[in-house]
Each structure stands twice: as structure tokens, then as C-alpha cells.
Length: 284
Image (tube, rainbow, N blue to C red; front, side):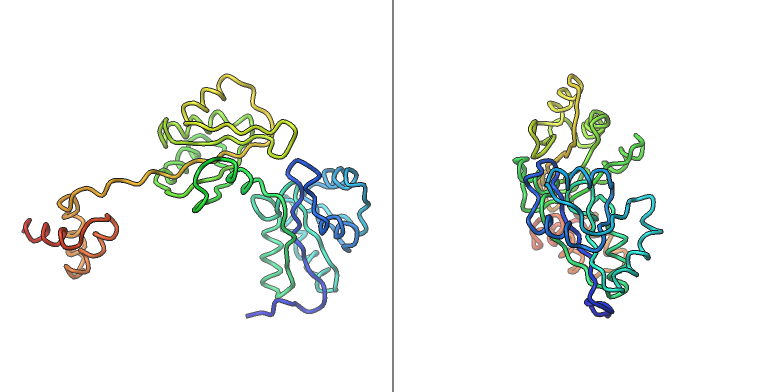
């Protein structure tokens, strides 16, 4: 395993930026923007607007680093770290590398044994999850769904049985098609929350069923940055042991010992092992 400190004293810092309210900028972010040797920014114009709002000046060199040039720019930035430079990576909003540029840079630094750290801060994913009113003990982040209708529907079909709360990002003009696809694949009654303009002046969190929020999207002009939080699939009733005899026999046909097959199916179906074993024997 390569050492985490790298060849010199340089390092990469992933720094979270405000997702809306500039007042959420941390003191560590402000200090590093002023002192880092290089600032790698997803959008240099947004970076300059941010530092202007903060009343500070970037102290180092600003480099554009986004999805269209990160393959070419990554090695250049890694060379700067090897030379002892401190690089701060910022995306348009929130934490870099989470549905934003930055992963390729971290991957390259880790492979090269160079130092990488993070200055945490605002996160649209966690903010939306916390405000959704849906279970937060287990969740997953699914980012943006595919733009094409068929691919979007297929992705949601794969997620229809997901038990964890799911967080998605979506563009305002694609929210209605997304909710329509949720209605088709998850059903009209699944609980969701549409979180719009988080931390901004016109922050809005709408909670309800897929049906209710689809009707809202159909009748309103939706604007702003959007996160959609979706409840996980409800747990299915275990059913009677007799319903799972075929699954046990299928495993036995594959060479699995009967007791092991019963144990595996019973655990998965949440039924009594003893009752399932008796049901299998009674069916023979």
C-alpha cells in the first residue's frame, strides 16, 4: 500500500462551498481560498462571484477543472502536489466529487500516494434528507437519473425494491417527467419530498405522495436547484412457509444441502426455519 503522505509536503483539499446561502461558507474555506497555491474550480466565474460575496481575494492561481477537461488536467495538478503545492478543489456548490468533478483527482492522488483531505461543509444531499421527514437511518444517493425516458424508467425499475430512503438530484425542467416515471415504477402512494432552493431565500420543501407532487409539478412552473427524496420500498409480508417450498427445492436441485437451503430461504423470507422445513417434507 502506498503511503498517504506522498513525496513532498503538498496536498489536495476538497472544500465544500455554500449550496445557496453564502453565510454557510466556513472559516477554513475562506482561509484556504486566500492561501492555497492553486484553486481548481468547476466554474471560475462562480468562484469569482463567491469570493466577491465573501469580500476576499484568491491568493493563488485559479485553474478551471470540470468534467470536460479533468482527464487532461488531473496529471498536471498531481505534479503540482508532488512539487509541494497546496491545491484546493471547489465545485459549483457543496462537496466536490459528489455528483461533481473531483473524483478523478482524488483517485489519481490516492493511486500516487499523495495527500488528500477535505474541509466539510454544506451538502444538498444531507440537507434534503434531513428536511424530508422520511427515514434517515439508512439512505442512498442516486444523483441524477438518465435524461432519456427509457433509461430513466429502467433505472427506477431497478430501484423499485430498494428499502433505503433515496436522494436524487434533478433539473427543474425534468422534474415532471421524473415524477411521472416514479408514479409508473414506484406507484402513486410512495412518500416523497421535493426540496427546492435549499438554504436560499425562497427555500421550499414539499412533502406528500408521488401522485400529489406530480399534480403540483404539472400545475406550477418549477425553478431552482432541486433534490428529490423518496421513501424506500415497504417491507413485504413474509407469507406462509408453504409459499417458499419451491425456492428451497430449487436450491436443493443445485446441490445445496436441505438444511442449508431451508436456512437460507427462511432468513431471506423471514419465516420460521422449523415450519419451512416441515412444509418441505410434507410436500414430498
